[in-house]
Image (cartoon, rainbow, N blue to C red; front, side, top):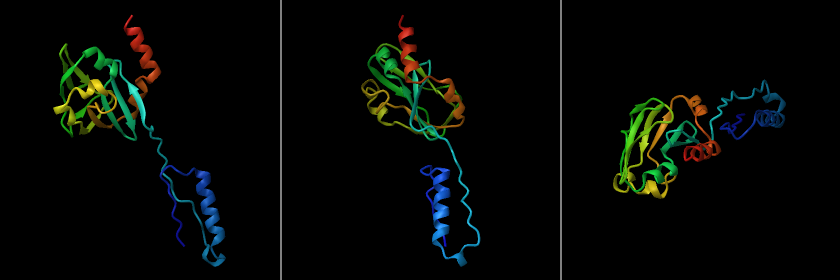
Length: 172
C-alpha cells in the first residue's frame, strides 16, 4: 500500500498523523508491518508580504522571490517618469546597492535593492511605457524580480503602516 499526501504546506503535522493512522486502520492487518509518517520539510516562507525601504523602494515578497520597484510616494515626488534603466537578468546585487535608475521631467534617481539577491526577471514593458510607474507603481509599474539570498534582510525594512508614518514625518 502507498499513502500519498500533499505536504506542500496545506496539512499540519496533526493532519498528517491522522491521515497515516487512518490509512493504517484501513489496511489489512497482514499488510501493516510499520507505518511511519513521511518526512515533512517545513518552510516558513513569507506569503505575499510588502516591505519598504527608507529610500522609497518596495519589495513584494512571494516565497523566495521579491518584486521590486519604487513606491507611489516616490513616483509622485518625481513627477512624469520618462525613462527607467533596468538591470540585466542574472545580475546580482547587495542590499542597498543601486540596481537601476529612473528619470522624470524633474529629476533622475538611482533605485536601490531592498535586499540582496539575483535578478530573475525585469519588466520590459517599462522600456516602451515608463509612465506606467506613475499609474501603478506597486502594480504594473514594477521594475525587477529578485531571488532573495538572505530573507533576514526583510526584517530591517518597514511594513505598510511604518512606511506611511515615515513618509508623513519626512514631509514635515
